[in-house]
Image 1 (cartoon, rainbow, N blue to C red):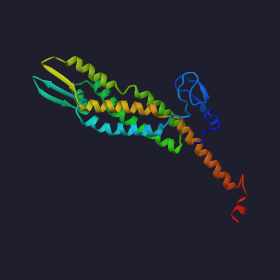
Image 2 (cartoon, rainbow, N blue to C red):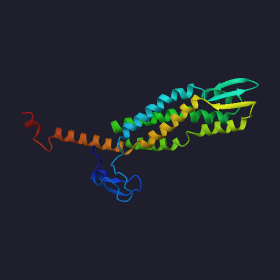
Image 3 (tube, rainbow, N blue to C red):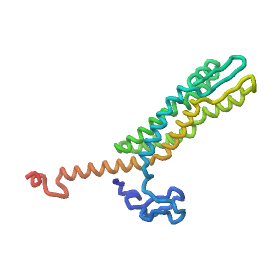
Image 4 (tube, one colour):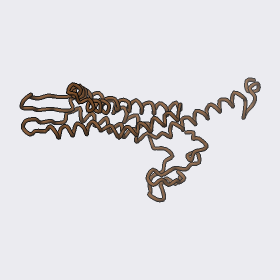
Amino acid sequence: MTFDPATAAARGLARCHSCGRVEPVDSRLCPVCATPLHLRKPASLERTVALTLGAALLYVPANLLPVLHIESTLKGSQQNTILSGVIQFWRDGDYPVALIIFAASVVIPILKVLAIIALCVAVRSGRSPRTMTRLYRLTEYIGRWSMVDVFVVAILVGVVQLGSVLRIDPGEGALAFAGVVVLTMLAAHSFDPRLIWDATASGRGQTGQADRETAGVGGAPNSMRHA
């Protein structure tokens, strides 16, 4: 792996992830808290890809399976998916609740999955490191809002629970959606954005080496090498 010469990693210095102390990576363990030292998060890209793939697979059942099972002595049994719940809230005139649930349950999870995929691609290409770093920060920031709709549903369940008249239980879709939220949060946490800059530095190094070889710098002139 090629590091930018201006970075601490190029000098073999690693920052402890626990206490923040900077030590030579050859020390292996932080002398303060005994945490293992690494220049980059071990297997960061592989873990991020695996977690993102799992979240993408769970996204489908999270939106297709019912998230609520409603048992009512007046209207019988009823099941609601995320989208059907959004439609019902919209029809009832609860527009803010419908928009919150739609944004937090449908839009944000898929955007977060796509953003993490873009970050993983950037690690391979090394393109637009500043833009990708901003995207990483945004992805981490919106992750904390991924459970907003779950809190809304929990409040609604607590409000409408009426004992023997009405009973609401979580469905399979709720478990799948919780899995999507947890996996995307872990994927964003396991991703190391410094890998994007490493890929950029590596690309620049390869380009510079190719330019030197083309110009004949550091070796015999082109005419002599082709002779």
